[in-house]
Image 1 (cartoon, rainbow, N blue to C red):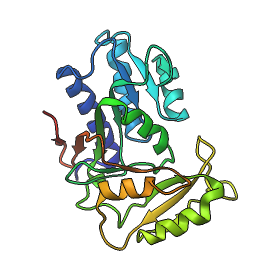
Image 2 (tube, one colour):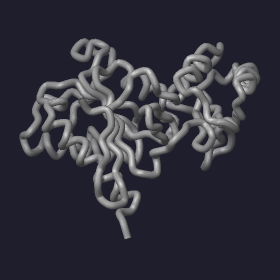
Image 3 (cartoon, rainbow, N blue to C red):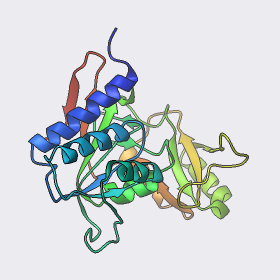
Length: 242
């Protein structure tokens, strides 16, 4: 048997952090964005190990969720806001997981409802890195894993109508252990969208974001990431690393 999904997540996180340090893309004194989810957390842990070993010093982190903030606090990694003067609205590198990655390195993110903060961090980073296990590598985007669209609650009906006009099947994301919709860290709601046929991902990102009442979509196309994908056989595929 090959590696389990959990083992692949640790493998790809460790490989990515180690490779990026070796390539000089993660370095002492840098400003780094840290993402959210089950693949991003092992990367935060690996980064912390390098800090504790003395390989890295004076790392300044900007996080995308309370989950990541708590992890950084546990590991002793200083956390800042994008608005802090020391960060000044731009990061050297951001690393995060993804729900799907296609051959052009377009991604879906937001399964954990944190994609707005993730996009703020990752679209304002000089280098964006995605880490994923083999189940996240797909040939096309839009027909299987839903694309999350964060919306202002008052705009739910008009946004739903506009998304349907783009061929989407929008479904309001409901809470699991609460009655009613999922509420994001920003106080908004999520419409999960799928299409019958594969979509033009960059074009759809622009079209969805032009709808009044949409805060942000979980399509990530405009800051092409370096992508690390772990495989069941223990290898790691690297895309777009120059």
